[in-house]
Image (cartoon, rainbow over the protein chains, first blue to last red):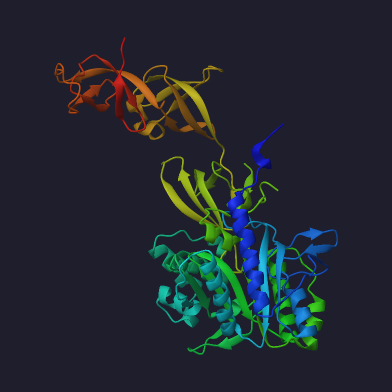
Length: 321
Length: 189
């Protein structure tokens, strides 16, 4: 039977723009002397992050990001590298999500997350210029400050009860299933009340993530002496495009975080995964001081074309694949 | 009833929330940052017709609602209940005032309505999009006035009041859009 699902979701114009975007990225990286690398999509180990679900293929995992392998390259060669990688995340499907998507991931040796923000902006400005979008000076929002201003309380004193109160005062739905998961409640608060205020025309960087959301970033103290992650996210309008870290290089601390995440998985009744011993050995050997960022190229294409959904910028999204 | 995980949510799925059956109107997968994923939905309460926003933690499971829509023919009202018949099985069901809502204004005998059943009982009735009714009472028509766009109230047997053009006469049959309660046209015999 003939159906219409054989047709691509993206128009030829969108595919051309998407190709031009990759060329623009490669030109920028080449000028900056950042080396293009390729790392395996299949690995015996994967991320322990309880909110990211890996596909298992026989006794291996499809990578959810090329981060671990790229850090092993950094530990070995201490040079700037980038990769345009297809990555896979089970269960992520929706208007702005496709389980298989394209990440531009790059690492700059000797930079911290703040210097890397400048680098990200330089690339974005180039992209904006190429596609004739006026570049507006980026805005900065501090996660901890934003939460504190919505809840009208210092961040350190903000509890789940305060967050629930904000939702009920503003008559917004709050899922009781959040239970005592403060980070989930904080993320939902950001998404409901902070992100919607971001300017549509330019990029906004979110800084100072709570230390509990550090993932693979270092932890420092902010101006209020609160421990915060040296992590940032970049949004264009209300759409999250990139996540960057001043990379944690302490192997012992990294192992502790992995094991903590595995125990969260156990608590939630989720699959246990093999943690990446090769990465931990590389960190123990010595990761150069560096910052790294992953940027979703499909979403960037979506923003550049003004598309309504990710299906419109992919040749074949999950529902057509 | 089966339970549904948020990743099975889609428009039209019937689920139980706060003890009432609801239908999912819209749903969106949201995943802020590297954190917890959520499913943000718009759901319509099938008993009250009210639409509200509801956010779920992804992976939550929700009880399905035993709800189905079925076409039934309107028979009569005994004052308290409105009686309908399944034209295939001839099975009869009675809907109460809450289930009927404003629908009683548009019920004429033999009209085929959509009856929403919850646990086998009617909870909502949707009349046909268009009905034809005879006008019980209206002011005398103004002859020749077919263009000026003025209107006047016309009263129906069911209690419905419809604004009609000035040239329409008492006793005439008119076509009405039940979704808006507006006059559509005159029905020529």
